Each structure stands twice: as C-alpha cells, then as structure tokens.
Image (cartoon, rainbow, N blue to C red; front, side):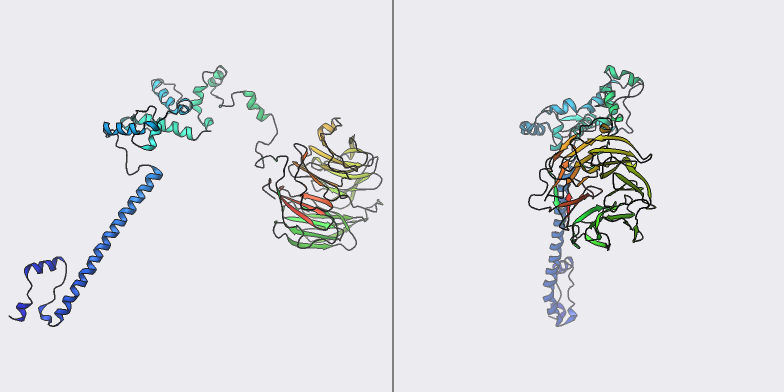
Length: 568
C-alpha cells in the first residue's frame, strides 16, 4: 500500500473532523504528521474548556440577573411578577384565603378617620351631575383604571387594603382610593393642606356658613377667630432661636482648655470679655498686660499682648462695635487701644475733674458714651469718639455701680444711699429714683440685653431681680430675691438671651452662682464640685452663649462650653 493510501481518512472521520473544526494534517507533511496527531487532543481539550467557561459565565449572568430581580422585588415590589388581573383560579384564591385567614384583621382606624379619599370618590359620584361642585378636577385621568380589576389577595403587600376577609378583586378606582387612604394613615399631619375635603367636613357648622359665602374657610384647629388673632396680638418671637428653652435644675456644660493657657497672667484677672465676633477674647489684670486670644476650645491661640508700664489694669472693655478697647486703673487717666490701627492712646486727666481713679466704668451699647464712676456721687460722661468729657450726672450718695439700658439712652446707677437711679441721657436728668428693697449699700448693677430686667447686688450678698416697667411704675417689690451668696456681690452678668444670670463675690472661694432666670432658681450642679474656681473676679458669656469665661485671682481664665447653646 502506498504512502498516499495509508493516510486517507475515512469519510466519517473527515466529517467528524470538520464538525469539530480541526485541521487534518496533509499527507505530504511526512514525519511531522505524528506530532500533529499528538496536538489534536490538546486543541480539543482547550476548546472544550472554553465552552465550559462560556457556559459557566452564562449561568453566572443568569444567577446575577435573578438575584437583582429578587432584590428589586424586595425593595420596590413585584416588578417582574406583575399581577395578572382576573386570571387567578378560584381554587387558588380560596386556598390562599384559607391560609391567610388567621392573619387578617380589620383596621377600624383607617376606616373611620383616614378614609376621606374614598369619601371623595363617593362624593364625586354623587355630585357628578352638579355644575357647582367644589371638588377640584384632576389634571389627567387614566381611563384604564375603571376597566382594570386588581386581585389584592394575591400580593402580600396589598392584603392590608382588604375591607373583608374574603375580598379579592376590586376596581382600579377603588384600589387608588384605598392606596391614598393608606398613605394618609402612614403620613399624618397634613390636615391643613386638605382644603376641599375639610371645607366639606366643616360646611355643616353654623359658624362657617358666612365664611363659605365669602370664599374663606378657617383651617382645622383654628376655627376660633380669637385663637387665630392671639398670634397677632403678641410681640413674642414665633421662631425660637434655640432648639428648646433652657431647663432649670442641672446645667449641661464641659470644661475646656483654659482660655489663657498659652500665656497665664502673673496677677489676678480683673477683666475678661468676648469680642462681638465671638472668636476673640480679651483678658486683663494687675500684671499691667492686656492679652488677646483666639478661642476655639482646643488650643486658644494667643494673638497679641500689650504692656502698660504705668497702669495696673482694673477694667478693660471692648466697645460694642469692636473697634477699640478702653483700659483703666487707679489713675487719673485711661488708655484707648485701636484694634484696626494697633495704636495705644493715653487720655486724661479729664478737664475740670480731680478724680484720682477711673477704675470703674461702663460703655453704652451704641458705642457712643463711656460712663465713669466719679467722686462724691458724680457720674462722668465721656464721648467714645473724641475722648472728651461731655457731661456729668449727680446723685445723692456715693456712686458704686453703673449699667446702661434702652440701647444706651438710659443709665442706671446705685451706691451708698441704697437707691437705684434711672437717668435719661438725652436730657441728662433723673426721671426715676427708687429704693432697692433690703439694700443699705449697693455694689453691683446689671441689665438684661433687652432691657426688660435688671439686677441689683448689695454688700450683704443679696441680689434683687426687678422688672423694669413695674419698678418704674411704682412697684418696689422685686420679682425674686436671691440669697445664695453671703459676701459682697462684686460682679453680675446676664447671658445673651437673659436665661442665665451669673453673680459672684471675690471675697470667698468658689463664690460664683448661675441663676436660671425663668424659674429664678440656682443650677444645682454649679459650681463644679471637683474643680475649684479659686476667687472669681470677672465673667463673660460669648455672643452666642456657647462659651463662658471665668477670670480668677490665680491668674487663670477658665473656659466652659454650655451645651444648650449651639453657637459661640
């Protein structure tokens, strides 16, 4: 047999090789034919593996698609298994109803109070022939709703819409009304938005007949006209600035890094005050230095320090507009520091006056006037712009304390005669003089930011809180007498919203109390039991109420965060 005849393949093998797309080696290739035969099984194996991999990939895609559909059904309902309306066999429905009979109950609340959408549908049917119906027409109506029947017993999430246990098929319009009623049940609180339905509900009332004729309907909950007008008869804030009112009893606070931790004072701190931007804090004391710190509660970086060689500082204060700092001590003169120009000016002595000390003063809220405590009952009025004496006021006793009110148009003063004087700075006359109940020697005065309240402290530690209008009207009895301090009251301060009054005495350790003004009670968890305040000398609240800084005789400025207030 020749070489050609030996290498001829049978017909069926040729067909099989063609089906498997395998190239048959040529009979002219000689000795390489045997090597090619050995490669054929390897090629078949690789192609077989490729097919298997393709099948596995297809199966994975099918499984992933099935899983995605399952998740979508779980989240959004049966999107890929729609309800076949009217095609469920009676036997299948009956068996499912028997299985679910134990789980069925009738929700009476939905039928009684929240089915007004169904009532709307009935109302439309009854008043379809009337031209003057008050029901607003829908913008678009689906005609298929009336033709469609929905089986609510087949889908689990629709069974809650049944009104009877054996109910299964309902029309599309009934289905829509029940869905609306279910939505109203799960999302209450929008009664004011249901104008038409509620106007029909209250149309039978006699009190609203005239309103309906005029085209006005009172919303539910506001049927009484006097109750509605009460909102317009008061000047109270309709929007409360803080989330809730400050509650008495316990004050939520936390101790932060000391405000002057980077540069503590070598002497007692006599003044601490926040700038109007709530980020800058001023500290001053008997070490003759004024320091400025950027307050963040973590690092409290020191910004600048000013040294006054010839003036131990008894008081330093920002002007309310934040442009200058007034610095004074037991000297005939005082200093003014311009924050913009970073320039210190020495002012005084005041022309025509012989005061040897200008250590006590107050700045008006409009930044226009500085009132100094003078000798022999005199109050010295100095212009904050020209730094010149513009007037004087004279009271009977010695002057010990001052406080501005009514946006700087009025001035309160008290002193050695136990009386409280009210001065009109426009005419520079005293328009009211009243006795501070139980006070022999007044030592401190403080007015609330709104001017409605003011507090008067005495040498005996008694603090009286007065309503300004009642006091000017002749009522001498205070709203509350606070007796929590037994030594001379040196310092008092209202916070930004007048819910907290701080009173302190520098003659006794930890003698600092915080008073809850609406209830006139002391916060029981202040001062902190485990931390000493030393001898408190001054205090200030940040403009937003979030921070409270306390200066002590130890040269430290303690910083606290008041959690009730969200802003510094």
